[in-house]
Image (cartoon, rainbow, N blue to C red):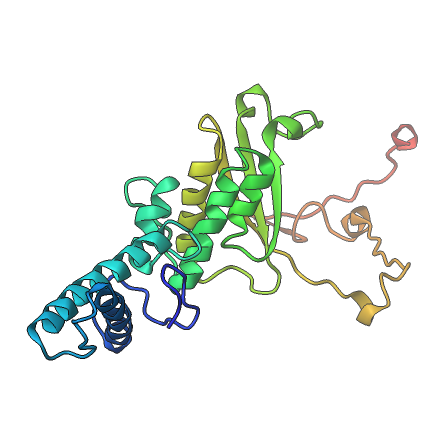
Length: 270
């Protein structure tokens, strides 16, 4: 049995339910310890150390209730420390500090993973509304490469497409060539927006963008070869081969016969 008000590392059940085999064993051990201490306080003519006489039954009942109270107080004491807070109070004692109106990200965490997630969020939150903290918030859900871009810095570049109206905005570009587009993209984006909304400055706007990349391996890893190939054609060569007046001896209004022209002066055409 662990010392009083000391967290037992071998303890399995940390819920608020005061029942179960483990709790009953702890209750019996604690009751026996308190019972012995109470008996030792009695005068020497009270010599019974087991349950039998009326006084020992009454002392045992008092010891049992004191044991229940003591175990409950120990649990409450452990709830003060975020590292040992019972699962039932994780949100009540930790989550409420950063999440409002009962909003929580959609995750598949177990109790301890959820505890660590909340502790990470608190650590990021108290870093302040800075780019580093916002990147860390996004990385709680995305494992790929992240690029955080602030619009006011991009506006200083030529042809960036940004102006003074975009000053209070930023983009988060997610690149993950290993997994590609996530299958639960809408859930992930909702989680990221929930995190960013509690970290980012209130006057800022943001976009989350997925950047798709392809692996390029030209010439089997030999790189790009320095060679070129071209195709040259001349359209007017084909014009010389075409009879410009349509089909010979035919037009849409009927038959006609081409007139042979002889003796015309074409010296001025060149």
